Length: 522
Image 1 (cartoon, helix red, strand yellow):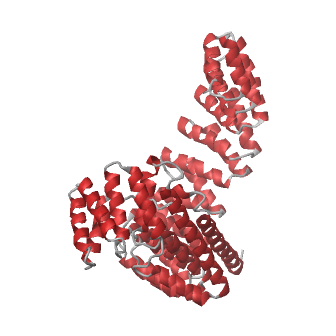
Image 2 (cartoon, helix red, strand yellow):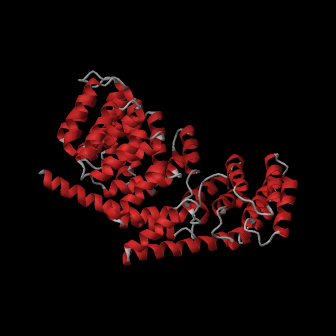
Image 3 (cartoon, helix red, strand yellow):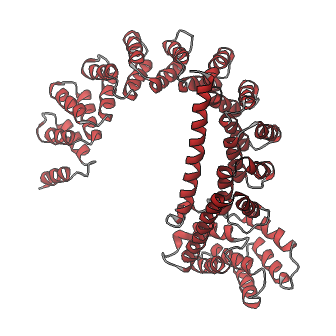
């Protein structure tokens, strides 16, 4: 395939990923109200985190009511929950129009929660979220709602308030998307406003803003996204911005992300940058940087991740550097990742390397051989099946033969692989391998497989194999399997096998199984 064709394919894939990612993000946000609890921020409400924000808060305010607020803060720090609740209750009652009443409501709810007074805590949070939806404490309030939700009755004021808040978010997000369609410049201005430090935009709104900016803004979005990527206080928003920058690509984006990578200490952010390098199919420099990191980065975790994305960044050109690294590498985890990346490539040369490792001709131990055999299933065809069949027939090590059988099961409906499994189930001399082949066949859960296993049971004499067949019948979830279990439970000459069959029938909720069990009890 020519480089031009490869680039065109990669570009189509990139655009498809961008569109799909934007659509998924928007759909997920629009569905927030319908699935409220699972999608609310997972950030736990911890005393240390909240007190840090509270300390900054009281230092930044000089309102006449702040003396009362500071006294409440001190009581919270000393874990005097009842007195703290009284203090913040007095604040709310005495200064109902104060600019800080939303914060007082939050800390009143916190003090109630610490005393186990969840209904009272929920009521205060409901008032906060209903009356002050743009409060800088709204995110913390929503997180506390999640924390105490199991202790609240459904339909309470707090849930109503949160749902209303989420509906407001949804409407604003949909409006922002529509504005991007109509006037990108004005939409970008709103995004910048939402993302400013001290903005009252909720976390959901900020995440949507970054996502929509990246998917709609194009090159005009780059400065704003770079600002978030460089200096954002929220690591998750930073990584989202980096992800969107990778989709946009270009040398200017590469230079900026490369600079961030060099000075970044957060491993998760650096990992996200590596993924963006791999996504920049229009930047050979990004691909070269990814290769450099794969070869020489001191951090094993970052090296493994760079190696993982090399085939995405370089295509077939990744083969030779991967093989060179594999030949000289001493770290087992790095070598394993190189094999995994080779397995993901469609290059026939990569498949040949895996076959050599699987055979043991490169001197690898059993663990590496098993890994290579397992990964060959990802590129399985008749040729691979034949090669593995030869290995199975000549191999003496039990673990290797076991892995080959498992790989045959992962090959789907390749006839040669399936035929070998049936042969092993019927006539393999090693009982353990026979039982494994039976289990693998049962995993297909099709009527033909179960019928074959039923016929095998009727001619089998080995009790261990018969037990393996009974377990396979139960796991197949096929009527034929259930009925064979019932037949064994009624008529088998072995009492032990009859009892085992009855236990397996008990795992089924099929009406026919329940009816049989009741017949036994009569």
